[in-house]
Length: 122
Image (cartoon, rainbow, N blue to C red):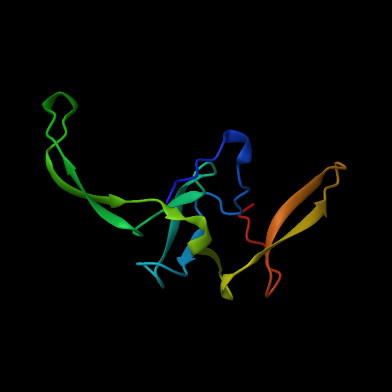
């Protein structure tokens, strides 16, 4: 099975942002929830706090004060396996609403599809 590498112009638009609360809907960590630490649109993956924990063997490096041993850290999770958490409803899909600002500009905000509450923290 060949691995398909995406070109930089083939970026997929990801609706998750840093610091969003998400729940894993499939895979090894199904049912767990955590905070998004980073999103990579080129690989279509996100790093979620306490999700996808792997053991990493590190070599000691006294110059950088790195103690060797087996360290646990998060591995990236496919964005398709995550759903954003609404504070009222739980895991939901995202809709977009346009808000007209007094300055004449238009702001696009993410809202919950069930209750209509805004998911952006602004």
